[in-house]
Amino acid sequence: MAGRGKSAAGDPLLETYLERRANLVRFFAARAGSTAAAEDLAQELYLKLAGRDPGASTENPTALIYRAAVNLVLDRARAESRSRGRETAWRETAHATLGGEDVADLPPADQVVASRQRLAQLVDALAGLPPQMQRAFRLHKLDGLSHAETAQAMGLSVKSVEKHVSAALKALTAKLGA
Image (cartoon, rainbow, N blue to C red; front, top):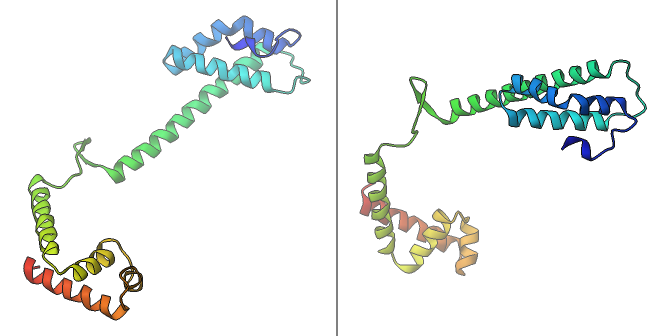
C-alpha cells in the first residue's frame, strides 16, 4: 500500500492523502479509464507528496492533493499523446497502408522466389571458380574487406587480389548472364 514507506504521522498532506486515497483512486479511474492505471497514478501521487519538502506548509491539503492529481492526469495524457504521435509517425514511414489498414510491406512472392533462385545460381557459379579466385572474391565482395586487407589475409600482393576479383567478376557475369 502507498502509505507504508514513509510515516504520515505529523504530515497533514500525507494524512489527508491516506484519508482520501479511495476517492483519489476513483478520481483517477474516471479519468484514466482503468483501475490499474488509477492505482499507478495514486502511487505516483503519493511518491510526489512524500518527496516534497516536509517543511512546506499548506493551508488546504485537500485542494493541493487534487491539484497535484489533476496535474498527474494531464502529464500522463500529454505523454500518451506524444507516444501516439511518435508511433503514428513511425508507422507512416515504416509501414504501407491501404484504406487506413497496415499491409505487409514485403516483396511479392514471385520476386522472393526469383531472388532465391538467382542467389542459388550465384552460389553455384561461385563454387565453380578456382579456389584462390573464389576466396579473393568472397573476402572482398562478400566479407567487405579492402583489396589490401584481402591481400594480407591471403598472403598475396594487392595486384594479385585485384586480378582474382576482376577475373571472378568476369566469370560470374558470363555464367549468370548479368
